[in-house]
Length: 338
Image (tube, rainbow, N blue to C red; front, side):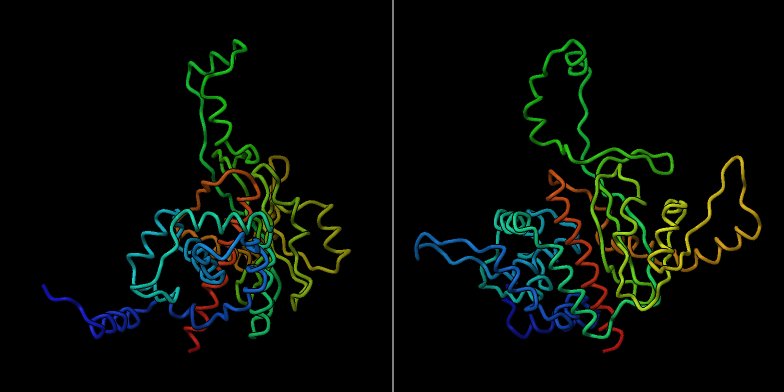
């Protein structure tokens, strides 16, 4: 059996680069040190002594979470992929002799970010990085929301019978610990969903997510509409689908100096005129760009299914997914111009 040498490894990495390794472009495009200060504060813990191994570098752990968000991996699957994939190791700056954080270490670091509540700050830090590198928000903004599912827990027939009789099922306490009591049900296009909503505002020019908000799925899209708008955009134009249209919202947009391009909606008593339908068609050419964002996220990582419990952890997972999208897109821009 021939043992591969250093030249064999370099040859393999060259082939990976030739075929186009997006992680390589991301790694070289992003100045990861811009996140260090906030990350160090989030995990700041008083050491009881000098004994025991030092913790992993905070930026390394953050890059691991970005990998997890890009590829929608569980903590256990993430640990395995780092051990198994050369491209992952190179992205993280690890070699064959490096210690690799295990699944529990990844979970603990994400918990540190959750308790510190800094994911939105990290998102804003990278947005400033985008703007200073020539990617300011331009040509208006588009607002939309996507549903993020969480696992559903259903009772058995016996358990439902016990509940109707005023009894508490034996598994109730265990299920309560695992049930996400912050998630809510909603219906969209005739289908029922249980989970949260990821509300985003995207700039029309570059299709970067400029702001976002996380709510239970039952919260109507229009309730966080105005909070998402970016005053730093070079244009006052705003696009959205018909769910955001109400006279109250239109008045507030007008008062804030925005120009609305919100889809019209008809009903049984009043159908859209030919002029209104033509206007909807024109607006949809721009508004549909926001759907590409959710499409890219699903294409690269699949539909996100949260396996965390509670809205605080959901905010971290979804926020990291939005940040990872921006980082990945920045790498693509660098790839196309490099």
